[in-house]
Length: 261
Image 1 (cartoon, rainbow, N blue to C red):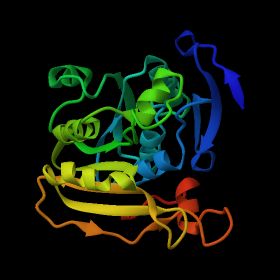
Image 2 (image 1 turned 135 degrees about the horizontal axis):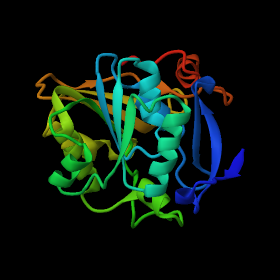
Image 3 (image 1 turned 120 degrees about the vertical axis):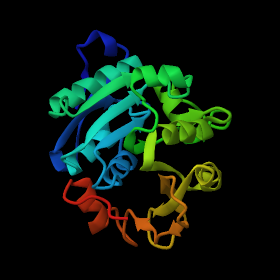
């Protein structure tokens, strides 16, 4: 259902209230532009069981972090986001879903200088898990949404992806995991930036149907590890026919099982 949000800070957005994880989460997000969906849930469900501290870069309205918090009861999270209206929505989502004691937002440009990020809470060598769903497209090659949040969420400039990886690795503790979800077409570039800084890298291709080319990849690496890279069998969103999700994906989306990889 679309509603005009009453809070002053979100006066420019018409928002919807959407259910995630089979109704375990109720999330307000902008009606148009970038909207959290399957990618955000998969990113949050990809977090290991062991981490106690989580940092999400470009957290948006908080779906990935809240998914991780739902699956990992001992986890606490810091959500870094630049857009003030989206931060306001995200904070409301944390309150509405009962996560204010385990999660908080910091409003920061993650490509800001290191001291600014540290002041905002992005402490170096600290977090057990760092996750990100960075902008997917080159800003010169795609048509962008009209709102600033949508523009930032969809497209990036030169060296953006490398700087996101650098920021993520700098905040991860020794032995901590760094997980990105990104376009499969950008895997070579992402691996280049991962390989300089992380080891024990695992790549999970995501396909719409069995036998099709991957459209997305989940990539996880561990800070300080020297273990070799692993390429997993693809995760299929759907079967060979129809629009139903596969049982594995349905279990994740309904909040009944996390991603095991």
